[in-house]
Length: 186
Image 1 (cartoon, helix red, strand yellow):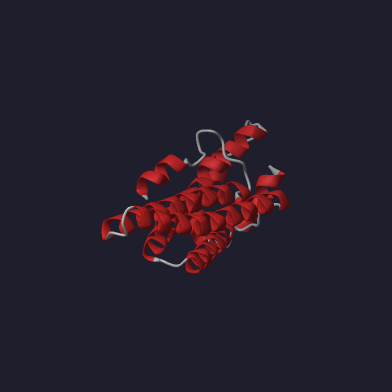
Image 2 (cartoon, one colour):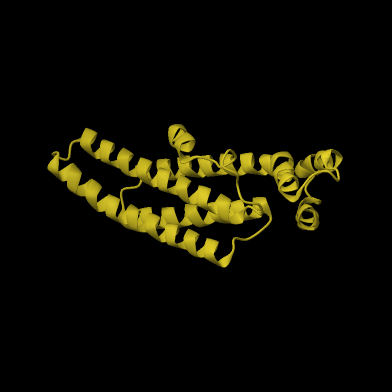
């Protein structure tokens, strides 16, 4: 209860969460065990934040997909991936009102670096594939589309990792957002 009260203090200034907090405290009683209190807080309060974070990840992934489909320069791809990834992680941290731990930050930083490397390598592969297929408009467009989709999925994966790192309570198995759903949206 003490931890949940401290956590709730971070969200008191947010009008979109205030009603959920009120509902949580109305439902809460002395018969709840620690695990029940955490689950109740997660379902009553964090669920709205998780939905907002999920929408943010899906939106940023779609934007990254589109930007990298249009881009034809490896350096521009790298800059776009870095910009979109860092912006998304910052927005998720702001949404949850907290920063990830050191290990969470390290994992996110590693994923960002992997995404940047992917953007560079996929650009080179896209150019080589277009040359092998005869540099037709269709082959160039299909390789650019594949590159954009791959980058969008990696961005979504990074966003889900950022959600897990920034969320003050761990996801339960049934609450955890899945990459499969975002992949369909992209």
